[in-house]
Length: 350
Ligand SMILES: NC(=O)c1ccc[n+]([C@@H]2O[C@H](COP(=O)([O-])OP(=O)(O)OC[C@H]3O[C@@H](n4cnc5c(N)ncnc54)[C@H](O)[C@@H]3O)[C@@H](O)[C@H]2O)c1
Ligand SMILES: *[C@@H]1O[C@H](CO)[C@@H](O)[C@H](O)[C@H]1NC(C)=O
Image (cartoon, rainbow, N blue to C red; front, side, top):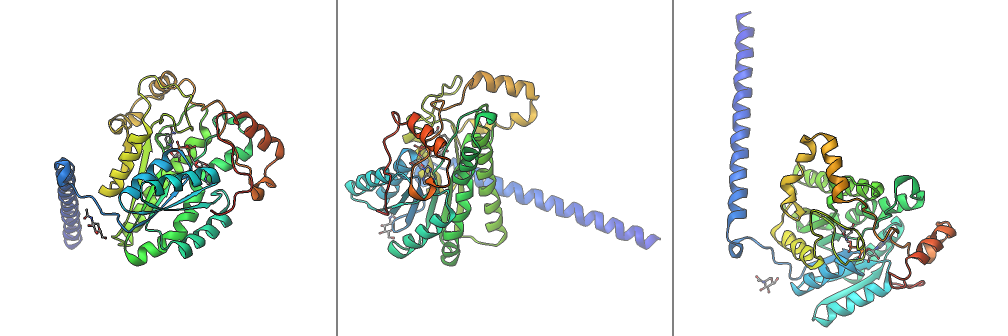
């Protein structure tokens, strides 16, 4: 009896010591992190990406193009994937124009086989991708019951499922070399659900979860040289995606600023980036406040988050045309034809 009590007491003491040790270690990690962020910018660590091969999905326009130009300026070889062949050609031209190295490929990220096929081609023709930026994204922008099934599925296919295929294609070599970085361009919509973006928000929540779980997995496996970063921007001006959305309390971000912050996060190996940065402190309120407060705030801030009030056009390419009901393909692409450049119907690999 006395022995058992002694054993229990020992166990409690052991647990207390463990918890204290854990807290002290956490405190030390916090101090190191605060010290690192408080260092003057010139003294902060930035990785050298000269010689890296950086793949930007959705590099045919918008944020992807701005990222490509910055990566090339820093000496990385840039690979661009997009369904928009004209857009990719333009980006390749722009990168070469500033003296950079660029390769463009047509790839439909919503098609797993196409992703694996183009990944193999990229590896053979350019080399091992060491920086992967999963940037391509689409939005339907209609209330849930008005969103055709095919658009809901496409939103998930492009915004998150494709990340599984690209990461499975390129992570093995990164682990082998103990050198690599996977950047997920998610959204603030991956932390906040809003009206008319049910499919978009849930796909971005999934992308945020993808980054976090992968980060945890690489940590648990003791992989030190492969980093992951998730970027969660608020609405961006003039990339085409959310141009017509009015935002009341917070100004929309400038695409160039988002690109600069993304590259900074890549080079400084940040884990999670919320843009604008101060929203990091407001987001936790969501879990603390009553839903009525959150809902009132959201409805005031974003009465209508629908972009153009029309979905991102479905790009007409031979392979996927058959799998899409023609009515939707035609009506969607016809309704946006004035706002988007026409897309090459029979684009081949560039
Ligand atoms: N624009 C915003 O307000 C905003 C805000 C937060 C997050 N984001 C995210 O940033 C990323 C970039 O967005 P953007 O604003 O540059 O949009 P964008 O529409 O200008 O660019 C997206 C690119 O992805 C390509 N793409 C679409 N479907 C594809 C597919 N199936 N296969 C290959 N490529 C495909 C498009 O052709 C386009 O070039 C997206 O993931 C988006 O969700 C955008
Ligand atoms: C980055 O690395 C390359 C070689 O890999 C080297 O030539 C270059 O000087 C480095 N740049 C900086 C700023 O350290």
